[in-house]
Length: 118
Image 1 (spheres, rainbow, N blue to C red):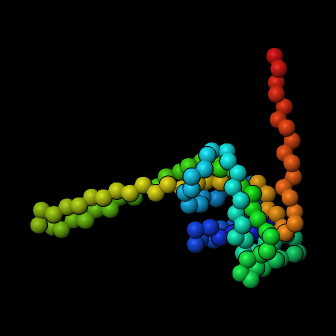
Image 2 (image 1 turned 45 degrees about the horizontal axis):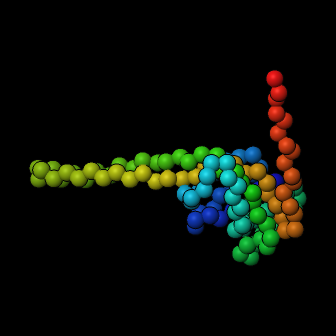
């Protein structure tokens, strides 16, 4: 089962258990995000294509990490003693796909974590 989801004018292929890197937003590590702009939903022989979105479909994700990409831009004009160096750091959010839900479905309840006692 996989889905094509749109976020920040980009499209991503989402499968349960994989991670994707989306645009930065103010969330905490371990928080749950819902991506609701599902364009295509495919499971087995069933394929739902949205016009433009699949109604009621959503993807439940968990925030895993906050990676950053450093970009350096340098301009240089020879024999003019002119140099310019600029840097930019672009923040992102890496999320793990937990559930892909069709219209009317709810996410299964998570089992409580067992605690070890000594």
